[in-house]
Image 1 (cartoon, rainbow, N blue to C red):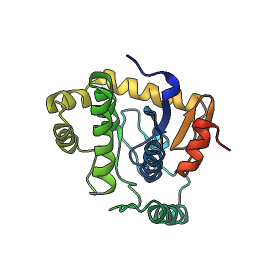
Image 2: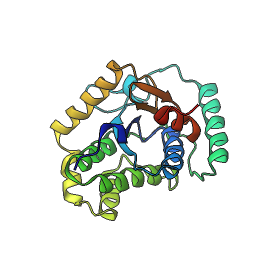
Image 3: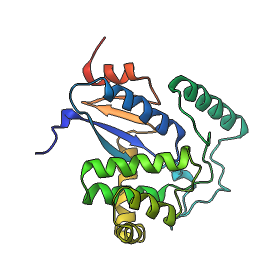
Image 4: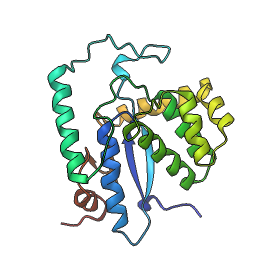
Length: 211
């Protein structure tokens, strides 16, 4: 039996976004307050789109307008949220990490495995980067994470090299942009949205309309 759309919250996110990791902690806390299950409808997003070459690689020399002051403010915001949500993180930012392969792997698992397996894999990717400082752009790291949650490692390796899957992820990114998603995380439910690592109370208002 499929889950009714009203029992799912769409989450636009990129694994290399620290606020996406922190936002998922907030969502988890809100989910824990509910009697009914609220599944995540993951929507891929690319924070590196302005620096990505036609072949999918990243050109870190491209000026995207984010200077040292921007990154310092971002770090301070991350640290404030770490304290607020009582979350330990190995990294504040992951500027040099590319999430393309991780998103492809997660997309494949979502399409071919049960929701619970995808969720475990998705959370494992976030944890590997933000609490262990591992490079989730590394195929071997993703294969290890897949193995830990019961996903065939050869399938994941093949998926990462699959040109069709790469194109599908790029299409997902484009769709998000056309829908007006300009930053992540963005939580969307029933025509309404909240952006950022918002507190559980705000997610409750988004989903339940609680004043």
